[in-house]
Amino acid sequence: MQNACGLQKELLVTNDFIQINAGAVAEQFIGQELSAYFDSYLEHNLFFWARDKKSSSAEVDYVVTIDSLILPVEVKAGKTGTLKSLRLFLEEKHSPFGIRFLSREAVILR
Image (cartoon, rainbow, N blue to C red; front, side):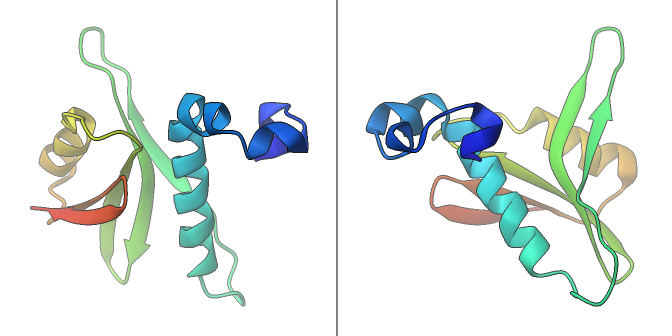
């Protein structure tokens, strides 16, 4: 994460770094956790979903499969967020539910 942001190790522990890069840090953490749960004997990748329409673009941070379910995962570092993209995914892909990680809690949306 530090190298991806082009930062030296001293900056990593400062509060300013966490506040400024909270979204990237949260997404990186969740991505690493999702990867850790994959079967280490099978090839795996992390995926995301993006929709580019003229007046309605959308993006979901991660898309994971559990058995035959395809589930969207949205990561929010702040306390607010409309989850418009997550709701669009649920509606368009007829997914039974999505997962949102917000600050220190995980919430399942139906």
